[in-house]
Image (cartoon, rainbow, N blue to C red):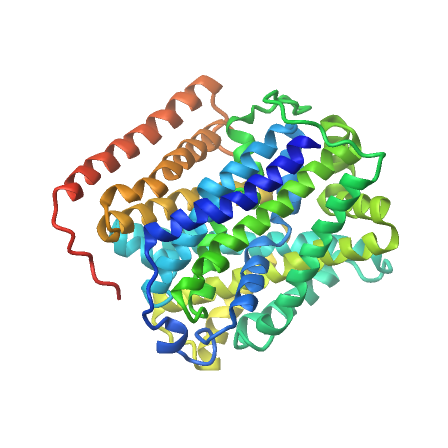
Length: 479
Protein backbone atom coordinates (compact mmCIF):
# COMPACT_ATOMS: atom_id res chain seq x y z
CA UNK A 1 0.00 0.00 0.00
CA UNK A 2 2.84 2.41 0.81
CA UNK A 3 4.29 1.90 -2.69
CA UNK A 4 0.93 2.57 -4.33
CA UNK A 5 0.21 5.77 -2.38
CA UNK A 6 3.78 6.97 -2.89
CA UNK A 7 3.50 6.36 -6.63
CA UNK A 8 0.32 8.44 -6.81
CA UNK A 9 2.02 11.29 -4.93
CA UNK A 10 5.06 11.18 -7.22
CA UNK A 11 2.83 11.42 -10.30
CA UNK A 12 1.18 14.57 -8.91
CA UNK A 13 4.55 16.09 -8.00
CA UNK A 14 5.83 15.16 -11.46
CA UNK A 15 3.05 17.22 -13.04
CA UNK A 16 3.74 20.19 -10.78
CA UNK A 17 7.53 20.31 -11.05
CA UNK A 18 8.72 18.35 -14.10
CA UNK A 19 5.72 19.54 -16.08
CA UNK A 20 6.70 23.12 -15.29
CA UNK A 21 10.30 22.43 -16.35
CA UNK A 22 9.08 20.92 -19.63
CA UNK A 23 6.92 23.98 -20.21
CA UNK A 24 9.86 26.33 -19.59
CA UNK A 25 12.00 24.40 -22.07
CA UNK A 26 9.38 24.88 -24.77
CA UNK A 27 8.60 28.49 -23.73
CA UNK A 28 4.95 29.07 -24.69
CA UNK A 29 3.92 32.62 -25.56
CA UNK A 30 0.82 34.64 -26.45
CA UNK A 31 0.72 34.08 -30.21
CA UNK A 32 -2.57 33.37 -31.97
CA UNK A 33 -3.25 29.62 -32.08
CA UNK A 34 -4.50 27.62 -35.10
CA UNK A 35 -7.92 27.30 -33.42
CA UNK A 36 -8.37 30.98 -34.24
CA UNK A 37 -6.15 31.58 -37.26
CA UNK A 38 -7.17 28.42 -39.16
CA UNK A 39 -10.76 28.03 -37.92
CA UNK A 40 -12.67 25.93 -40.50
CA UNK A 41 -15.66 24.87 -38.41
CA UNK A 42 -14.74 21.19 -38.74
CA UNK A 43 -11.34 20.27 -37.28
CA UNK A 44 -10.01 23.73 -36.32
CA UNK A 45 -12.11 25.56 -33.75
CA UNK A 46 -11.73 26.94 -30.21
CA UNK A 47 -12.51 24.57 -27.32
CA UNK A 48 -12.63 25.53 -23.64
CA UNK A 49 -9.57 24.39 -21.71
CA UNK A 50 -11.38 22.05 -19.31
CA UNK A 51 -13.12 20.40 -22.25
CA UNK A 52 -9.83 20.12 -24.14
CA UNK A 53 -8.25 18.32 -21.15
CA UNK A 54 -11.06 15.75 -20.95
CA UNK A 55 -11.22 15.28 -24.73
CA UNK A 56 -7.45 14.77 -24.83
CA UNK A 57 -7.73 12.21 -22.01
CA UNK A 58 -10.39 10.26 -23.90
CA UNK A 59 -8.48 10.56 -27.17
CA UNK A 60 -5.30 9.06 -25.71
CA UNK A 61 -6.74 6.64 -23.15
CA UNK A 62 -9.37 4.20 -24.37
CA UNK A 63 -8.64 0.84 -22.78
CA UNK A 64 -4.88 1.41 -23.07
CA UNK A 65 -4.24 2.35 -19.42
CA UNK A 66 -6.56 -0.48 -18.33
CA UNK A 67 -5.63 -3.43 -20.56
CA UNK A 68 -1.95 -2.50 -20.85
CA UNK A 69 -1.65 -1.98 -17.10
CA UNK A 70 -3.29 -5.34 -16.30
CA UNK A 71 -1.00 -7.20 -18.69
CA UNK A 72 1.97 -5.21 -17.37
CA UNK A 73 1.00 -6.13 -13.81
CA UNK A 74 1.76 -9.76 -14.68
CA UNK A 75 5.42 -8.76 -14.26
CA UNK A 76 4.70 -7.77 -10.64
CA UNK A 77 4.82 -4.47 -8.73
CA UNK A 78 7.93 -3.45 -10.67
CA UNK A 79 5.42 -2.15 -13.20
CA UNK A 80 4.60 0.72 -10.79
CA UNK A 81 8.07 2.17 -11.39
CA UNK A 82 7.70 2.16 -15.17
CA UNK A 83 4.23 3.69 -15.08
CA UNK A 84 5.34 6.52 -12.79
CA UNK A 85 8.77 7.44 -14.15
CA UNK A 86 7.96 6.45 -17.72
CA UNK A 87 5.07 8.90 -17.67
CA UNK A 88 6.78 11.82 -15.92
CA UNK A 89 10.09 11.67 -17.81
CA UNK A 90 8.87 10.19 -21.09
CA UNK A 91 5.18 9.97 -21.86
CA UNK A 92 4.01 13.36 -20.61
CA UNK A 93 7.03 15.13 -22.13
CA UNK A 94 6.31 13.30 -25.40
CA UNK A 95 2.66 14.39 -25.39
CA UNK A 96 3.39 17.99 -24.43
CA UNK A 97 6.10 18.47 -27.04
CA UNK A 98 4.08 16.68 -29.71
CA UNK A 99 1.03 18.84 -29.09
CA UNK A 100 2.86 22.13 -28.77
CA UNK A 101 5.15 21.61 -31.78
CA UNK A 102 2.06 20.73 -33.80
CA UNK A 103 0.37 23.91 -32.54
CA UNK A 104 3.41 25.94 -33.65
CA UNK A 105 3.04 24.35 -37.11
CA UNK A 106 -0.68 25.02 -37.73
CA UNK A 107 -1.82 21.71 -36.22
CA UNK A 108 0.41 19.57 -38.46
CA UNK A 109 0.43 15.79 -37.94
CA UNK A 110 3.38 13.81 -36.62
CA UNK A 111 4.07 12.70 -40.20
CA UNK A 112 4.42 16.27 -41.44
CA UNK A 113 6.49 17.25 -38.42
CA UNK A 114 8.81 14.30 -39.05
CA UNK A 115 9.36 15.51 -42.59
CA UNK A 116 10.11 19.05 -41.45
CA UNK A 117 12.50 18.19 -38.61
CA UNK A 118 13.98 14.83 -39.67
CA UNK A 119 13.96 15.14 -43.46
CA UNK A 120 11.85 14.11 -46.47
CA UNK A 121 12.45 10.34 -46.17
CA UNK A 122 11.02 10.50 -42.63
CA UNK A 123 7.93 12.27 -44.00
CA UNK A 124 7.07 9.43 -46.40
CA UNK A 125 7.90 6.69 -43.91
CA UNK A 126 5.88 8.32 -41.16
CA UNK A 127 2.86 8.93 -43.36
CA UNK A 128 2.61 5.20 -43.99
CA UNK A 129 3.67 4.13 -40.49
CA UNK A 130 1.31 6.47 -38.62
CA UNK A 131 -1.71 5.59 -40.78
CA UNK A 132 -1.02 1.87 -40.22
CA UNK A 133 -0.73 2.45 -36.46
CA UNK A 134 -4.00 4.36 -36.44
CA UNK A 135 -5.70 1.55 -38.36
CA UNK A 136 -4.41 -0.97 -35.81
CA UNK A 137 -5.54 1.26 -32.96
CA UNK A 138 -8.98 1.83 -34.40
CA UNK A 139 -9.40 -1.90 -34.98
CA UNK A 140 -8.22 -2.87 -31.49
CA UNK A 141 -10.79 -0.43 -30.12
CA UNK A 142 -13.53 -2.01 -32.22
CA UNK A 143 -12.97 -5.66 -31.34
CA UNK A 144 -12.50 -5.32 -27.56
CA UNK A 145 -15.78 -3.46 -26.81
CA UNK A 146 -17.71 -5.49 -29.38
CA UNK A 147 -16.64 -8.72 -27.64
CA UNK A 148 -17.87 -7.52 -24.24
CA UNK A 149 -21.18 -6.14 -25.53
CA UNK A 150 -21.81 -9.49 -27.26
CA UNK A 151 -21.31 -11.26 -23.91
CA UNK A 152 -23.84 -9.00 -22.20
CA UNK A 153 -26.56 -9.07 -24.88
CA UNK A 154 -28.75 -11.84 -26.38
CA UNK A 155 -27.00 -14.42 -28.55
CA UNK A 156 -28.71 -13.07 -31.65
CA UNK A 157 -26.66 -9.90 -31.27
CA UNK A 158 -23.26 -11.37 -32.10
CA UNK A 159 -19.82 -9.81 -31.93
CA UNK A 160 -20.01 -9.24 -35.69
CA UNK A 161 -23.26 -7.30 -35.28
CA UNK A 162 -21.72 -4.99 -32.70
CA UNK A 163 -18.62 -4.49 -34.85
CA UNK A 164 -20.88 -3.16 -37.59
CA UNK A 165 -22.69 -0.88 -35.13
CA UNK A 166 -19.42 0.54 -33.82
CA UNK A 167 -18.06 1.08 -37.33
CA UNK A 168 -21.22 3.01 -38.26
CA UNK A 169 -20.67 5.23 -35.20
CA UNK A 170 -17.03 5.69 -36.27
CA UNK A 171 -18.23 6.85 -39.67
CA UNK A 172 -20.37 9.56 -38.09
CA UNK A 173 -17.77 10.67 -35.52
CA UNK A 174 -14.99 10.80 -38.13
CA UNK A 175 -17.03 12.88 -40.56
CA UNK A 176 -18.80 15.31 -38.21
CA UNK A 177 -17.26 18.60 -37.01
CA UNK A 178 -15.33 18.09 -33.78
CA UNK A 179 -17.83 20.03 -31.66
CA UNK A 180 -20.87 17.95 -32.68
CA UNK A 181 -20.09 14.56 -31.13
CA UNK A 182 -16.57 14.62 -29.67
CA UNK A 183 -16.92 18.05 -28.07
CA UNK A 184 -20.25 17.17 -26.44
CA UNK A 185 -19.83 13.55 -25.33
CA UNK A 186 -16.14 13.16 -24.55
CA UNK A 187 -16.02 15.44 -21.50
CA UNK A 188 -18.82 13.35 -19.95
CA UNK A 189 -17.07 10.05 -20.68
CA UNK A 190 -13.79 11.52 -19.43
CA UNK A 191 -15.41 12.17 -16.07
CA UNK A 192 -16.80 8.61 -16.04
CA UNK A 193 -13.32 7.17 -16.73
CA UNK A 194 -11.92 9.17 -13.81
CA UNK A 195 -14.78 8.13 -11.50
CA UNK A 196 -14.17 4.50 -12.42
CA UNK A 197 -10.48 4.72 -11.50
CA UNK A 198 -11.20 6.61 -8.26
CA UNK A 199 -13.79 3.98 -7.26
CA UNK A 200 -11.39 1.10 -7.87
CA UNK A 201 -8.64 2.94 -5.97
CA UNK A 202 -11.05 3.49 -3.08
CA UNK A 203 -11.88 -0.21 -3.01
CA UNK A 204 -8.20 -1.14 -2.96
CA UNK A 205 -7.45 1.25 -0.11
CA UNK A 206 -10.50 0.77 2.11
CA UNK A 207 -11.69 -2.82 1.54
CA UNK A 208 -9.73 -5.09 3.92
CA UNK A 209 -9.72 -8.15 1.65
CA UNK A 210 -7.38 -6.56 -0.86
CA UNK A 211 -3.65 -6.07 -0.30
CA UNK A 212 -1.52 -4.13 -2.76
CA UNK A 213 2.01 -5.60 -2.81
CA UNK A 214 4.99 -3.33 -2.27
CA UNK A 215 7.44 -2.56 -5.07
CA UNK A 216 10.07 -5.17 -5.81
CA UNK A 217 12.49 -5.33 -8.72
CA UNK A 218 11.87 -9.07 -9.11
CA UNK A 219 10.41 -10.35 -12.39
CA UNK A 220 7.27 -12.23 -11.33
CA UNK A 221 5.84 -13.00 -14.77
CA UNK A 222 4.38 -16.56 -14.77
CA UNK A 223 5.74 -17.24 -18.27
CA UNK A 224 9.21 -15.93 -17.36
CA UNK A 225 9.03 -13.13 -19.90
CA UNK A 226 11.92 -10.72 -19.22
CA UNK A 227 10.99 -7.30 -17.88
CA UNK A 228 13.31 -5.77 -20.46
CA UNK A 229 11.93 -5.14 -23.01
CA UNK A 230 8.53 -6.84 -22.72
CA UNK A 231 7.07 -4.86 -19.82
CA UNK A 232 8.06 -1.56 -21.44
CA UNK A 233 6.16 -2.51 -24.57
CA UNK A 234 3.16 -4.18 -22.91
CA UNK A 235 2.13 -1.32 -20.61
CA UNK A 236 2.00 0.97 -23.65
CA UNK A 237 -0.37 3.93 -23.10
CA UNK A 238 -0.07 3.96 -19.31
CA UNK A 239 3.56 5.14 -19.44
CA UNK A 240 4.37 6.38 -22.95
CA UNK A 241 2.55 5.99 -26.24
CA UNK A 242 3.30 6.99 -29.80
CA UNK A 243 -0.43 6.85 -30.49
CA UNK A 244 -0.65 10.06 -28.48
CA UNK A 245 1.56 11.76 -31.07
CA UNK A 246 -1.23 11.18 -33.58
CA UNK A 247 -3.88 12.48 -31.17
CA UNK A 248 -2.26 15.59 -29.70
CA UNK A 249 -2.46 17.51 -33.02
CA UNK A 250 -6.25 17.19 -32.78
CA UNK A 251 -6.35 19.34 -29.64
CA UNK A 252 -3.46 21.47 -30.96
CA UNK A 253 -6.04 22.64 -33.50
CA UNK A 254 -8.45 23.60 -30.69
CA UNK A 255 -6.55 25.16 -27.76
CA UNK A 256 -6.90 28.93 -27.55
CA UNK A 257 -3.66 29.67 -25.67
CA UNK A 258 -0.23 28.09 -25.71
CA UNK A 259 -0.15 28.50 -21.95
CA UNK A 260 -2.89 25.88 -21.65
CA UNK A 261 -0.62 23.25 -23.20
CA UNK A 262 0.71 21.87 -19.90
CA UNK A 263 -2.80 21.22 -18.61
CA UNK A 264 -4.05 19.70 -21.86
CA UNK A 265 -1.09 17.60 -22.99
CA UNK A 266 1.18 16.96 -19.99
CA UNK A 267 -1.76 16.88 -17.58
CA UNK A 268 -3.90 14.43 -19.56
CA UNK A 269 -0.97 12.00 -19.77
CA UNK A 270 -0.42 12.15 -16.01
CA UNK A 271 -4.14 11.51 -15.50
CA UNK A 272 -3.91 8.48 -17.78
CA UNK A 273 -0.92 7.19 -15.82
CA UNK A 274 -2.86 7.50 -12.56
CA UNK A 275 -5.57 5.35 -14.15
CA UNK A 276 -2.95 2.82 -15.29
CA UNK A 277 -1.38 2.71 -11.82
CA UNK A 278 -4.78 2.01 -10.25
CA UNK A 279 -5.46 -0.85 -12.65
CA UNK A 280 -2.02 -2.38 -12.28
CA UNK A 281 -2.53 -2.38 -8.50
CA UNK A 282 -6.05 -3.76 -8.90
CA UNK A 283 -4.83 -6.65 -11.03
CA UNK A 284 -2.31 -8.00 -8.52
CA UNK A 285 -4.40 -7.16 -5.44
CA UNK A 286 -7.71 -8.61 -6.67
CA UNK A 287 -6.24 -11.92 -7.84
CA UNK A 288 -3.63 -12.15 -5.09
CA UNK A 289 -0.61 -12.42 -7.40
CA UNK A 290 0.64 -12.49 -10.94
CA UNK A 291 -0.09 -16.19 -11.58
CA UNK A 292 -3.82 -15.83 -10.91
CA UNK A 293 -3.97 -12.55 -12.82
CA UNK A 294 -2.32 -14.14 -15.84
CA UNK A 295 -4.78 -17.05 -15.71
CA UNK A 296 -7.75 -14.66 -15.47
CA UNK A 297 -6.56 -12.73 -18.51
CA UNK A 298 -6.11 -15.97 -20.45
CA UNK A 299 -9.55 -17.29 -19.41
CA UNK A 300 -11.70 -14.15 -19.50
CA UNK A 301 -9.78 -11.87 -21.82
CA UNK A 302 -8.97 -8.29 -20.92
CA UNK A 303 -12.57 -7.03 -21.05
CA UNK A 304 -13.90 -9.93 -18.99
CA UNK A 305 -11.19 -9.43 -16.37
CA UNK A 306 -12.05 -5.74 -16.01
CA UNK A 307 -15.73 -6.59 -15.68
CA UNK A 308 -15.02 -9.23 -13.01
CA UNK A 309 -12.87 -6.86 -10.93
CA UNK A 310 -15.42 -4.04 -11.09
CA UNK A 311 -18.44 -6.26 -10.42
CA UNK A 312 -16.89 -8.08 -7.47
CA UNK A 313 -15.31 -5.02 -5.92
CA UNK A 314 -18.07 -2.45 -6.46
CA UNK A 315 -21.23 -4.47 -7.08
CA UNK A 316 -23.87 -3.40 -9.60
CA UNK A 317 -22.46 0.11 -9.86
CA UNK A 318 -19.07 -1.42 -10.63
CA UNK A 319 -20.60 -3.50 -13.38
CA UNK A 320 -22.05 -0.40 -14.98
CA UNK A 321 -18.74 1.46 -14.67
CA UNK A 322 -16.93 -1.51 -16.21
CA UNK A 323 -19.24 -1.50 -19.19
CA UNK A 324 -18.63 2.21 -19.68
CA UNK A 325 -14.89 1.82 -19.14
CA UNK A 326 -14.26 -1.06 -21.53
CA UNK A 327 -16.99 -0.28 -24.08
CA UNK A 328 -17.48 3.47 -24.42
CA UNK A 329 -13.93 4.59 -23.62
CA UNK A 330 -12.16 2.44 -26.24
CA UNK A 331 -14.76 3.45 -28.79
CA UNK A 332 -13.96 7.09 -28.13
CA UNK A 333 -10.28 6.43 -28.84
CA UNK A 334 -11.07 4.33 -31.87
CA UNK A 335 -13.09 7.02 -33.59
CA UNK A 336 -10.40 9.65 -33.03
CA UNK A 337 -7.83 7.18 -34.40
CA UNK A 338 -9.74 7.07 -37.67
CA UNK A 339 -10.26 10.84 -37.54
CA UNK A 340 -6.51 11.37 -37.15
CA UNK A 341 -5.85 8.97 -40.03
CA UNK A 342 -8.23 11.01 -42.17
CA UNK A 343 -6.37 14.21 -41.31
CA UNK A 344 -2.97 12.68 -42.15
CA UNK A 345 -4.31 11.46 -45.50
CA UNK A 346 -5.77 14.93 -46.09
CA UNK A 347 -2.33 16.49 -45.59
CA UNK A 348 -0.87 13.83 -47.90
CA UNK A 349 -3.42 14.27 -50.71
CA UNK A 350 -4.11 17.98 -50.29
CA UNK A 351 -7.88 17.39 -50.01
CA UNK A 352 -9.39 20.23 -47.99
CA UNK A 353 -11.57 18.80 -45.23
CA UNK A 354 -14.14 21.58 -44.99
CA UNK A 355 -16.08 19.85 -47.79
CA UNK A 356 -18.13 16.83 -46.67
CA UNK A 357 -17.43 14.99 -49.94
CA UNK A 358 -13.67 15.13 -49.37
CA UNK A 359 -14.06 13.76 -45.86
CA UNK A 360 -16.11 10.86 -47.25
CA UNK A 361 -13.50 10.08 -49.90
CA UNK A 362 -10.88 9.49 -47.20
CA UNK A 363 -13.04 7.99 -44.45
CA UNK A 364 -14.77 5.15 -46.32
CA UNK A 365 -11.55 3.32 -47.38
CA UNK A 366 -10.11 3.70 -43.87
CA UNK A 367 -13.15 2.13 -42.22
CA UNK A 368 -13.20 -0.61 -44.87
CA UNK A 369 -9.59 -1.50 -44.02
CA UNK A 370 -10.48 -1.45 -40.31
CA UNK A 371 -13.38 -3.82 -40.92
CA UNK A 372 -11.03 -6.32 -42.59
CA UNK A 373 -8.55 -6.11 -39.69
CA UNK A 374 -11.27 -7.07 -37.19
CA UNK A 375 -10.93 -10.61 -38.55
CA UNK A 376 -7.41 -10.85 -37.08
CA UNK A 377 -6.94 -12.29 -33.55
CA UNK A 378 -7.10 -9.53 -30.89
CA UNK A 379 -3.96 -10.68 -29.03
CA UNK A 380 -1.92 -10.56 -32.24
CA UNK A 381 -3.27 -7.09 -33.04
CA UNK A 382 -2.42 -5.87 -29.53
CA UNK A 383 1.18 -7.11 -29.74
CA UNK A 384 1.80 -5.39 -33.06
CA UNK A 385 -0.07 -2.30 -31.87
CA UNK A 386 2.08 -2.17 -28.73
CA UNK A 387 5.37 -2.41 -30.64
CA UNK A 388 4.42 0.03 -33.41
CA UNK A 389 3.02 2.31 -30.71
CA UNK A 390 6.31 2.50 -28.80
CA UNK A 391 8.31 2.79 -32.01
CA UNK A 392 6.26 5.81 -32.99
CA UNK A 393 6.92 7.26 -29.51
CA UNK A 394 10.64 6.86 -30.17
CA UNK A 395 10.35 8.71 -33.49
CA UNK A 396 8.16 11.46 -32.03
CA UNK A 397 10.72 12.08 -29.28
CA UNK A 398 13.52 12.40 -31.84
CA UNK A 399 11.33 14.86 -33.79
CA UNK A 400 10.90 16.91 -30.62
CA UNK A 401 14.65 16.72 -29.99
CA UNK A 402 15.37 18.11 -33.46
CA UNK A 403 12.87 20.91 -32.88
CA UNK A 404 14.44 21.87 -29.55
CA UNK A 405 17.96 21.78 -30.99
CA UNK A 406 16.88 24.39 -33.49
CA UNK A 407 14.42 26.45 -31.46
CA UNK A 408 15.01 26.15 -27.71
CA UNK A 409 16.73 28.99 -25.85
CA UNK A 410 19.69 26.67 -25.19
CA UNK A 411 20.45 23.68 -27.46
CA UNK A 412 21.17 21.42 -24.48
CA UNK A 413 17.54 21.85 -23.36
CA UNK A 414 16.90 19.17 -25.98
CA UNK A 415 18.24 16.58 -23.52
CA UNK A 416 14.74 16.54 -22.01
CA UNK A 417 13.55 14.63 -25.08
CA UNK A 418 16.82 13.08 -26.31
CA UNK A 419 17.29 10.93 -23.20
CA UNK A 420 13.84 9.27 -23.33
CA UNK A 421 14.20 9.01 -27.13
CA UNK A 422 17.44 7.03 -26.72
CA UNK A 423 15.81 4.84 -24.06
CA UNK A 424 12.78 4.06 -26.26
CA UNK A 425 15.09 3.35 -29.21
CA UNK A 426 16.69 0.55 -27.21
CA UNK A 427 13.30 -0.76 -26.06
CA UNK A 428 11.80 -0.79 -29.55
CA UNK A 429 14.62 -2.57 -31.37
CA UNK A 430 15.30 -5.07 -28.57
CA UNK A 431 11.63 -6.08 -28.50
CA UNK A 432 11.13 -6.62 -32.23
CA UNK A 433 14.34 -8.67 -32.40
CA UNK A 434 13.41 -10.83 -29.39
CA UNK A 435 9.62 -11.26 -29.63
CA UNK A 436 8.05 -14.23 -31.38
CA UNK A 437 6.01 -11.91 -33.57
CA UNK A 438 9.31 -10.28 -34.54
CA UNK A 439 12.54 -12.15 -35.28
CA UNK A 440 12.65 -14.42 -32.20
CA UNK A 441 16.42 -14.05 -31.75
CA UNK A 442 18.51 -15.06 -28.73
CA UNK A 443 18.33 -12.68 -25.77
CA UNK A 444 21.92 -11.45 -25.56
CA UNK A 445 22.03 -10.65 -29.29
CA UNK A 446 18.88 -8.55 -28.91
CA UNK A 447 20.18 -6.72 -25.85
CA UNK A 448 23.47 -5.85 -27.56
CA UNK A 449 21.75 -4.75 -30.76
CA UNK A 450 19.26 -2.57 -28.84
CA UNK A 451 22.00 -0.94 -26.78
CA UNK A 452 24.17 -0.36 -29.88
CA UNK A 453 21.24 1.16 -31.81
CA UNK A 454 20.44 3.51 -28.95
CA UNK A 455 24.13 4.45 -28.53
CA UNK A 456 24.58 5.24 -32.23
CA UNK A 457 21.52 7.51 -32.25
CA UNK A 458 22.60 9.28 -29.07
CA UNK A 459 26.13 9.82 -30.38
CA UNK A 460 24.64 11.35 -33.52
CA UNK A 461 22.52 13.57 -31.29
CA UNK A 462 25.61 14.68 -29.31
CA UNK A 463 27.32 15.57 -32.57
CA UNK A 464 24.31 17.69 -33.62
CA UNK A 465 24.18 19.24 -30.15
CA UNK A 466 27.82 20.28 -30.43
CA UNK A 467 27.13 21.86 -33.82
CA UNK A 468 24.16 23.85 -32.52
CA UNK A 469 26.05 24.90 -29.38
CA UNK A 470 28.48 26.77 -31.63
CA UNK A 471 25.81 28.29 -33.88
CA UNK A 472 24.10 31.67 -33.36
CA UNK A 473 20.58 31.13 -31.94
CA UNK A 474 18.58 32.27 -34.94
CA UNK A 475 15.51 30.20 -34.20
CA UNK A 476 13.88 28.57 -37.19
CA UNK A 477 10.59 30.33 -37.94
CA UNK A 478 7.45 28.28 -37.37
CA UNK A 479 4.94 27.76 -40.15
